[in-house]
Length: 193
Image (cartoon, rainbow, N blue to C red; front, side):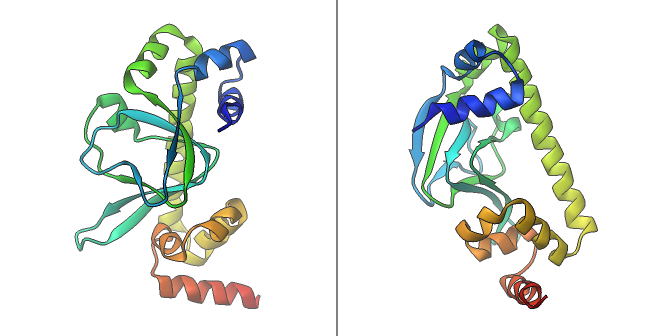
């Protein structure tokens, strides 16, 4: 448990004086999530916003055939939240599952709302996190349409090499929008180059 990781992340996103960073992080509580447990399941309302200090977590939905399709993979340090569910207090459509044991910090909805109303820096943090999330989602959508599976995998290797060592290949294949067999073929082809 190291709140300094959370505070450094906030500082990088907000660029506020250190006293304000401590004030921004004071309402976060430490939690541990065991591998395969959920922070949020489809149909539930998001009561907490999470910061991943250590570990790996994924989000997924079930397709019309009942298969799990990974929509995102998170590695520390990272804020993890279903913004619509959290801020609208509406049911989520995704499942948030720990891939490994995770160390996390969380803030509940009431404390987050109180901080938004009291602290300009908290509003800046929320806005910047939303922009980062939207940008990431937009880049992912474009990549799924414009890039081949091999290019998507190569980008993942380049930008997130730690995922390859810590996340099951089945989850990575699902995230890339391909089958396990296709991912194995791509990995063999890349290793030959």
